[in-house]
Image 1: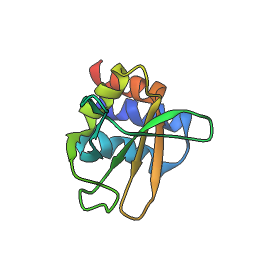
Image 2: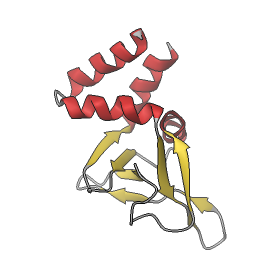
Image 3: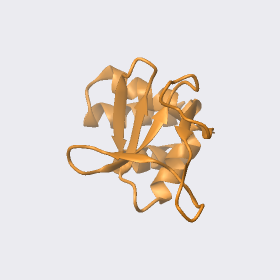
Image 4: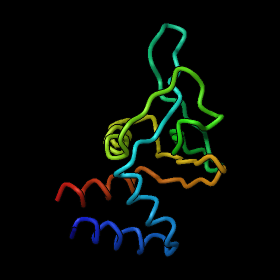
Length: 120
C-alpha cells in the first residue's frame, strides 16, 4: 500500500488534478488495448501519435469495443505497458483514451518515476 501512496504523492506534485492520479493508479492494474501495426517488411509496430510539442505518444484504449480499434489489435496489462514504453527509445510516452474520447497523456519521465516507486 505504501507504494501506491508514494505514486499518488508523486503525481500530486506533478499535477494537482485528482483524475490524473486516478488514471495512473487504475491504468497500472487494468488491461488496455492497442492497434497492432505492421511495417512494409512485416515487422510489428506500436502505432503512435504526435502531440503539439512533437512528442511521439503510443495510443491505448480502455475498452476493446472502442471504434478506433482495428483488427488486429491486442490487449496488455497497464504495468506491462509502462515497462515496455520505458524501454522504447523512439517513444516519449502514452495517450490513454476511453470510448467517450476523454484522454490523458503521460510522458515517459512520469512512467519511469511510477515504475521506480512500484519497484522500490
